[in-house]
Length: 514
Image (cartoon, rainbow, N blue to C red; front, side):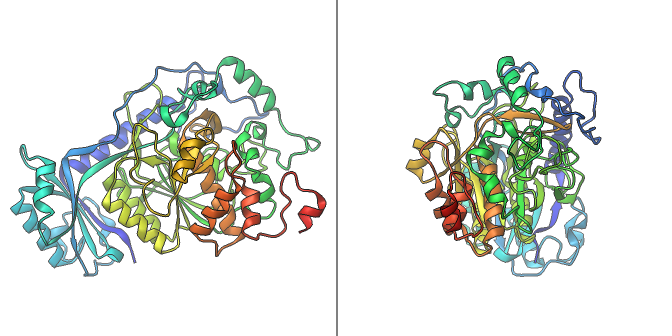
């Protein structure tokens, strides 16, 4: 049974999404193809041979990008009415078609008629419509007319018994800052949760990183031959290698709802099962838009292990689908806080599709205001057994979706443990984290987006090792594994769940045998 389909898009909003998608491609291309790197982000990059230090790690940092906090769009609202009818099979194949010419398109005839009545009575223009069958809802994205005020309209509509849900079109942002904040995160006492930003490492730190990134040999004592594994301090702090001796996340379905992903990156080639685009493609299967944030998150979760390239992903055996619901803001020279955006419309479709696809783990490295529709979808995903992993919001955003969803695994960056402890959040590495970036590159970034990606990878490993472990058990095991400073310990959490065959870091032979 489909969620988020069929879909009808009409009018200016669809054109705006398409325009944003085009600007995102331009921005991703500008950031990926740095001076001296002529490769197109749309073409498969040539693998480094022999591996050399990531060029991005020594490139000069651009000016800090600025962006306002996510907000409600002042010209659009989302309304939902009850819809217990079955949509036509395959009706979502043409998202720009006029659904009113097709009986049952984007919901039953009764729900469609009710939508038209609401539009007339409240002076609204329907821009898009889609059904959420398990919730028995038909959702409509409406544009306001003239100078109508969103708050005043919603106050009137919420008193209408025909309307089951009424809310603004909320905006959200991803929670890694781009290369402007790594230097700040590396300073003593810096807090990534409060700043939400990141910068590139200095030339001196990059030189040290290059030495640490020398190709690993059989005598190095590492189980991996990936040349930058030595830089993956977070991976090592979490004792992920010990858990990977018994689990690589095989057959666990992971949904990454984010910006586009460079699936042609050498470390991600063959690792992304499918990519769907809800920004400009109406959910169509695509080859992907090589945007930075999604590529960073995907690298931490899924980068291939022991391929003599780059880094090691936490769950390289998982079945991962990319759902593009966010886009990179254009007209900034370098990605920074808030430069990748999403909204209720794109996220609802992506989340619905992830549920329909049977996702076991859903990564949401983003944050924004409370959102009733998205929360209902998230709760439905949890009821079907999915584990939601959410990035902890920085102080400037406050709590909202997805961090306020009950039962979600909310993750803060290591170093922000005091705030995390007060809120019952998990803690994982999120400062100066090395990961994949578009155009075959690697770079460091900082933010709770990356901490959440680490936990998503670990949860995939744990679900593969113990398929019946639900979110409450996983949360207890991960909370119990946390050290005072370093965050979660994957191997210790697995041992708490009763996974056998483990030899955790620091074990004696007798301990490992128990």
